[in-house]
Amino acid sequence: MASLYWKVKAYLETNGKSKDEFENNITLRNDSDGNGSYISTWNVEGLTQPTEEQITLVDAEATTDFNNNRTRKTRKRAYGDIGEQLDEIFKNIDEWKTRIQSIKDANPKE
Image 1 (cartoon, rainbow, N blue to C red):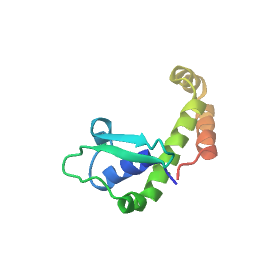
Image 2 (cartoon, helix red, strand yellow):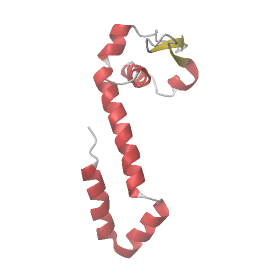
Image 3 (cartoon, rainbow, N blue to C red):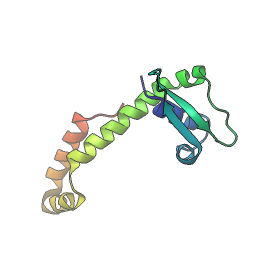
């Protein structure tokens, strides 16, 4: 199950809005009573704030987005510095391709 952050991003995309809408128009808060996160500010033009049911409907998509984002970060760390990669490519592109493919195979996207 994805966090509210990822669910709201998925809701925006599902309704034709950019993830960039999140930055300046939506604020999430955690309930001080420990009841979880909630939307405290919603100023997205042309799209009403989602209901709990609408948020639940995008959970699978949000979970996939979260997992793929985590995979991208893992891959990026494993790939290493771009300068080092360019040197590796220059010296032996086939070895570089093999190394990159093994990283991708070990960290597949959903």
